[in-house]
Structure formats: C-alpha cells, structure tokens
Amino acid sequence: MHLLDWVVVAGYLVVMLIIGVWSHRQISTTSDYFSAGGRMPWWLAGISHHMSGYSAVVFVAYAGVAYDQGIVSYVVFMFPLAVATGIGAFLFAPKWNRLRRRYDIASPLEYLARRFNVTTQQALAWSGSLLKIFDVAAKWSAVAVLLNKFVGIPLGWGIVITAAVTLVYCTAGGLWADALTEFGQFIIQGVAAFAMIGAVGFALADEGLNYASFWSALPEGHTDPTTTSYPAYFVLVYMLVKTFEYNGGMWNLAQRYMATPDSAQAKRTALLSSALYLVWPIVLMLPMFASPLLVQVEDSEDVYAQMAIEFLPAGLLGLVLVGVFSHTMAMAASDATAISAVMTRDVLPRIWRRAATFTDEQSLKAGRYLTVTFVFLSVVIAINAESLGGVLGIIVAWVGALIGPISIPLMLGMLRRFRHVGPTAALASWAGGLISYGLVKYAFHLSDAITVVTPVLVSLVLFIGTGAIHRDAPEAADEIVDALADDSPESAPAGR
Image (cartoon, rainbow, N blue to C red; front, side):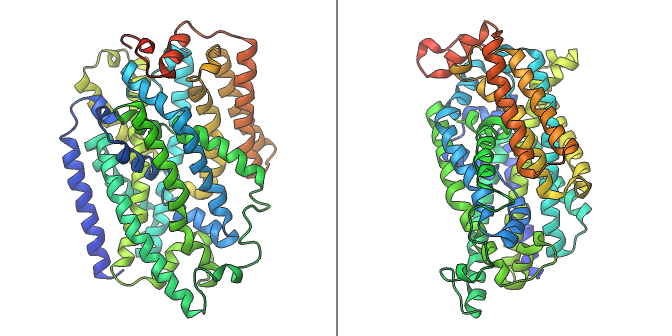
C-alpha cells in the first residue's frame, strides 16, 4: 500500500475513536447501551440493520463464489435477505418494538421467560451465544484474509487488530456507537464500491468489453441463477432461514427494531434495510462477476483483494480496505452488543444470585465486561477458522444451519397463531433441530444444501406439530401475544 492509503486508514480509525467518545457520553443506563433508549431514528436504524447483516465475508467467501460460479453468489446469498427483511417489516419488526415499549426489555430473549419458561430462555441464550461466537469468528477470519493480501499482515495479527479496534468503540458507546459508525461505514463503503466499479470498468475496456457486454464472455454457467452446488430448493429454504435470522433470530438485528421510538418507525427500518439488500449488494458484487475475465488467482477467496491491488490507484486502495474492514467491524460490534445484552439481562442473573440485585450502573459495567469476553472468545475461534471448515464453511454449514432451531421458538412465540404453543414444543423444536444438524453433517456427511435445509425444517415441524398436540403455554402467553398484535391502548399491559 502507498502512503496515501495508510493516511486514509489512519483517518478512518480517528473517526471511529471520535464516534466512540461521543457515544460514550450518551450512555447512562443499560437501556441506552443496549437499545439506544428507544431514540434512534428509523433511517439510521435501517442503515445500521443493513450494515450489521453482512461483513467482509461478502468480499472473501461470496467473492470467491462469484469468481467460481457467477451470479449465483447474489441470488443465493444476498437476494434472500431482501425478501426476508421485507417479510419481517410487516410480521416481526413492529412486535420487537412493542416488546421494548410495553415490557421494558433490553435483550431480545427477556420475554421468553414469561412466554415459555426460564428453561427455554436459558437453552436459547446459551446455544445462541455459542453460535454467535463462531459467526463473529468467521468475520474476523475473513477480514484478516484481506489484510494479509493488502498489507501482508499475518492472519493471526489481522484478527487481533480488527477485534481490538472494534472492542474500543463498541464497549464505549454501545448501540449508539454501533449505529453511528455503521452509518459512516456505509458512506465510506459507497465511495469505495463506486471507485472499484470505475477501476474495473477501465480494465474491462482494455479487454474490449464493458459492463453491458462482459456477461457473454464469462465462463459457461456464470449467468445461471442456480447451480448444482446451490440448487433452487436451497435458495427457497435459505430464504426461510434468513426470514427468521434477519428479523430477530440474529439478536443484534432485533435490537435495531427495538431502538426506534415506535412500531411504525420499526417497520420503516425493515423496509429500508430490505431495499438496500435488494440493490446494494449488486453495487458491491458487480466487479466480482467480471473477475474471471481480468485476474487469475489460486485461491478464489483472494479475488477481490487481488483486483483492488491490480486496478486501484494510491489512496483508493486504502479506501477499499477501510470499506471491507469497517463492514466486518459493523457486524461484529453489533453482535457483541447483542450477546452482552442477552448474557447481562437473561443469563447472569440466573447463574449468579448477586447479579439479580445489580444496580443499573453495575449492569452496565457487567455488559461491557461481557462484551470483552465475547470478543476474546471469538478471536480464539477465528485463529483456528481453517480447521472448522473455513470462512464459507462456518457461515453456511454452521450458522446458516443452526440459526433455525435457535430462532424459531423466539420468533414464532410472538405470533397469535401460535399462542397455544408452550415450552414443550419450544424445547423439542430447539433440541430436534440441533440433533438433526449433528446427524446430517457428522453422521451422514451430506451436502451443505441438505445441512442447511434439515435443521430448520425439523425445528419448524416439531414446533408446530408438538404445539398442536401438547398445548402447555403459560397464562402469560395470551397477554404477551395480544400486547404485541397492535398498538391499541387496551393491548398494553401495565409494567413488565
């Protein structure tokens, strides 16, 4: 990298520090730290929701799929997010906001103790927290690959540096710091993305091509929306998985809905995020689709970095690095805040009696300590990512497959249609999904598509089927689903 590139990177880090300091001054309670005190405008929450939904994995794993297989990388991994979030705008986003306003919750899992029981809450809290450690580890690993390619930083040090920078601002400012840095990162990423499009456009022109004509020159199959690796049924089930994941199953995204002042703004948050998922990934991935015509790489996950190094002038290379670097920090920081909320509000008081009597100041301090712990554990896993199947292996076969069993009771428990479903069905759904995952992946060694499909379908069938046979919902279930159904005054209970 040129000196100008390093100046751009240094300037970005200074801006992150300033945002962290400002956000720290806005935090006085756990509600401020975990849900922005319900004061976040919908447009900021929408951009934050979008930026928190994907990371440098786009520029590493998905870029590799684009290099090897073409537009399927968008059809399979990005388009389902637009559909899923659009569905959530009407079905789930307003309910998350009502949960915060009517029950004064700061963690997405707080309501589960009353809706089902404490056992269900703890099962989802512990397994979901463990899953998110692996999820964030994949993000650290992805950005470390880019740092290694751009500036030669060893993978282990790249992981540690990224995590350390993220930790500084997210422990200082909580959700406010996450959202504001994500807004800045969105702007930076936009400039970097269009710079990359321009540079690759010139490179295509040197080959006698342009963005309208290069498609016909691509290798065979690169314009097919589905492939044998990612068939049509995989796209549909992946869309189902993402409907749960991106509307609350991924806890940090539920916090964006909770952070807005009312349910109408929560709905607009989801609609904005959905629109961005539909359009913005095309902007980011367009150069990747042309990559087989311009560069040759041994490892397809290096393709985006290689294109940036070959085609971008001094200064812009640093901007692209900042763009992909910031994307990972956005998602990891929001995950860290969500996990610390769950552990502080839902887990710690159950395993340590003293934590149940914490003052708000003590809870805030505990949340920051738990954020540090979460980041440390994810760094340890990231350093060993290759032995766990690599970046794409973790994202697809681990996170994609396991998010269904963890999120189905959490999400469907808010809907009136399932008001009769109690803890027996919730725990059966959770356990059955996890067991089926273990069988298809480790006992039968089936494909990634089957590995992702099976757990979510098993969990869904068990939740609905067991709930229909064994109706053991607690009395509070009716009150909760009624309170979340609309904004009428009579549906609002008093207190938590």
